[in-house]
Image (cartoon, rainbow, N blue to C red; front, side, top):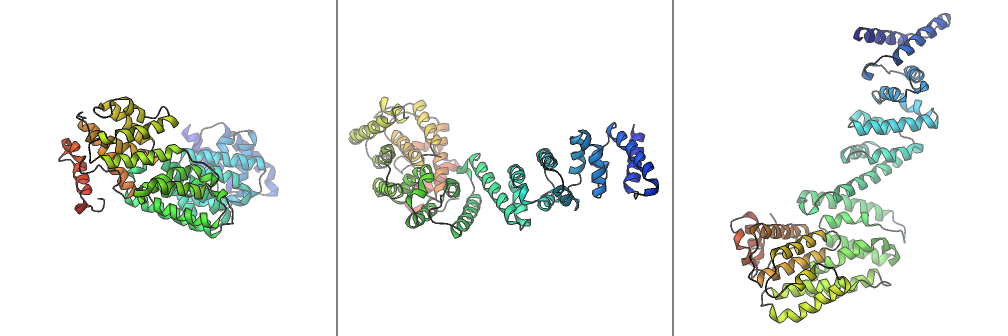
Length: 441
């Protein structure tokens, strides 16, 4: 069989290489017919089949594509994507053929990582009428491949398609990544790329143009809340408030946390004012403000016995449960929250705090402070593993926001003494002492 395949390959090179002669046209046609039939009935490595010009392409099309062997035909073509004559040939084919070609190309890129040559071929093949095909192709490329295309092409339409795919790719990556674990280099890179896109967007901005969360959310995930709010404030002063309606969820996430970080003494009033400015015709859910009160109350009472704060805690928690009856804070309230909260309840509160980070980070902060209150005012002993999980998460949250706002106070920190000697204990110990507040390591 191997010798037979080699004979067919040799005959193929002969047929493809010979010039058409009117004198021997019938003989050449017969020779090609025999060869086409042989190619259809033997298994030959597609990589061995040459494709050097438009005549070769036409020969394979007659041999395979025209008789329904589309997979075999496109397998040959995919091995020769870099051939310079392909763009012109493709543009002259029927719409059905072009559709089949891009379906095959998509499958090829799914099963094989595209080479540099194939990415260059993508640029050469592009025509405006292929936009829908390219949109699908780009959606399946890696960030590295998309950046290469962006660097190498000057075609405005293709660049727009690649940029859109790149933004969606980065958003998808962020959604699948624990962004509290981003390094400073990753956060700075993310913030820089987002700022550049916003700069381009603002430069071509038309008044009352709608703005969407994906324009800003990377700044939130990079911990650049102050920068994000400053940009939004600028836009608010220049535009109709209606353009912020698609940003409702993003702002409901950001405003309360921004209030806690940069206006801690007046977080409640600052947040209310911000909501009113961005959404003058809406009433925000009061549960947001109840949690801001709960955060401030929990911070305040950590250095004192809890008994004097019992009434105010009860008021705030009842207000939350009135709006959200199944809120996890009710687990603490239903227990004897002045004395003993067992570890399973504390861990349930901690788990819920983590779950709320993406949509309500101010509630995450408030629940962490409630856990510190529990640690400061009761005799229950918690496992070192739970304490380590709690302290590590709080530290990551602080690194994300570049703020010490959810670290335990010095008065509460003694509850973590079982972790003495660990890296996380040392990091937090240095950070909560005013004279030793240093840059995050």
